[in-house]
Length: 136
Ligand code: FEO
Image 1 (spheres, rainbow, N blue to C red):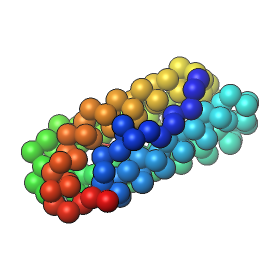
Image 2: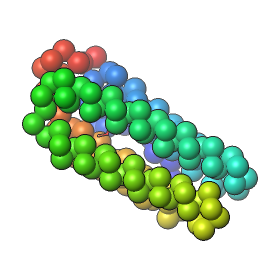
Image 3: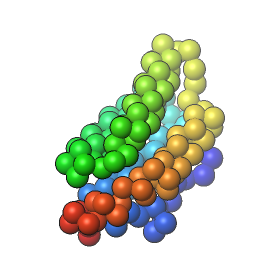
């Protein structure tokens, strides 16, 4: 399990979004660190909950701007967001019911999802957001 390090390749040059993505990286790394160092289930549950809560808030930020700017890919992008949240909450529910442990497998799922989503889907709306003045 390696930490998610922020790199310019993840930047959309849209400050509000980049700041939220950086915060998600931070929260993810804190959760992963907790898994590696054997934190208690309560502590891991809190870290997972914060990561999911901030992801929900972040998606709402993006979706509000996509709608405001009439982004053509809004429906598909929102569907992907909704699927991820449903999957993350299902995982959280299983963890809270002691049906799963948070492990490297969970960590890999979240890492890949975060990186791939930013580099693929989020990058697509960046030119529109910037053209509307949502830049650094
Ligand atoms: Fe930055 Fe579409 O999530």
